[in-house]
Every structure is written in structure tokens, then in C-alpha cells.
Amino acid sequence: MTRAALDRAEARELSLGNGPLRPRDAATLILLDRHGDDIHVLMGRRHARHAFMPGKFVFPGGRTDRGDGRVPVAAALHPDEAPRVAGSGARATPARASAIALSAVRETYEEAGLLIGRPGAFPSVRPEWRGFADHGLLPSLDGLRFVARAITPPGRVRRFDTRFFAAWRDSVAVALPGGGPTNELEELVWLPIEDAKRLDLPRITAMILSDLEQRLADDPRLTPGSPVPFYRMLHNTFRRDLF
Image (tube, rainbow, N blue to C red; front, side, top):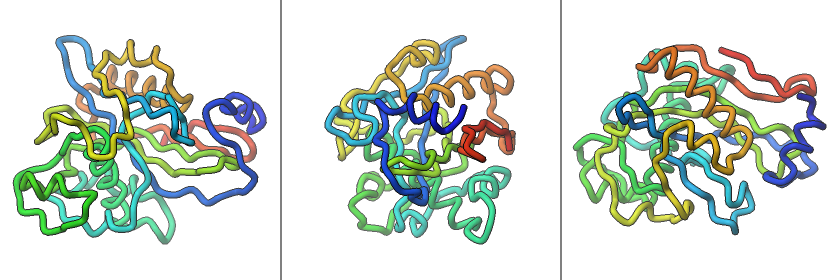
């Protein structure tokens, strides 16, 4: 798909801008739960007042904050996943990979009230991690599986270099009854993947959900280090490559 065609297709869900803003690191967590032969996925609907993808169903996620890289963990990313999460170039460090993965865990707590971790004293008083401190948990990354990467095309008001992770529901140590503290998602639902694909989804969310469905069919255990799709604009063409 050319950039012009993609701009037309996404005009209703993304705000178009003028500048080639450098994409910021971001992360998303796709939580999965087995129900017999079906696999359910957690989806949440963004508030209509949001400037970015209002009213769309998405996975919990958001941008990586500077402080995420300084948060201690109970278990690190699997060694076959971390180098690919970090990317390439001078910024491709283990610390960057950990920060990106931690942002997925933090956003899942903030937006969905689900804490992925293990017992341990959390030393930080940062408000965005307060739920972990209150429940005596340290974030745990070893259950996260890298399943996709997507860079927002140029010309958008906001651009992200997003890593998509998947994890199973049994990695959730605490589920807060009132949901997450930010209330960014006004509706949270667990649905079979086939039903989730019929929701009002951003184009990239729909594509990655289909990718994940196929991977689960081929590799139900989500083996670490497996190739993942990488969506990006390259030479004025929106591409999907495996890396």
C-alpha cells in the first residue's frame, strides 16, 4: 500500500499532521486466556474524547516513559526476546528493551488494573507504579512474548515505534476490582479472537490480531525468539516484513 492510499484509509481514525516527527518508543500488551479450544483476548474501548483513535477498541498500551527503565523487576525478558525488542543501532541496549517491556506492564496496570508481577518489595514511590508497591509486587517480564512491531507512518500528529507483546492471563498476579487508575479505557472485555476481530479496531490492531491468531495456530506456546511481523513505511510503501 502506498503512503497516499494509507493516508486515505486512516484519515478517520488518526489525526494527520505536517511534520516527520520522530516516532517515540511505545508498547502494547495483548493478554490471552484459554477457554477450551478457544483463546480469548482482552480488549478495551478508548474514550471518545481522546485525540488519538477515539472510540476504537485497542489493547492496553502507551508510550515508554523515561522512568520505566529504572524500575526493578522480579524477572527479566527472555534472553531470546530482549535483543530484538531493543532494535538496532546505538540505542539498541538491554536497558531500552527492559524499559519498553516495562511500559507495557505499567500501561496494563494503569488502563486495565491488571498487575503482572511476583512478590517482592517495590522500592519506588512513583505514582504510576503505586499499585505494585501497595500489593508488594515487582514487575515480571519473563512471561512476555514479542509478537509484532509497528512504526506509525510519517505525517501523523503522533508517531510511535510500538512493540506488541503477548502474555497469558495466569501471569496476572492482582486484578484490581475497580480497573486501572487512569480510566483511559471505558470498557474492558474478554472475547474470542474471532469475535474481537469484528470490533471497531484501528487498522494496525486488526492486522496484528490476525497475525497473532495465525501464530497461535502454528505455535501455541509462542516460542521465544520466533520471527515477528514488522509494519513500517519504507520507500513510500507500507510494508509488512518478518524479522
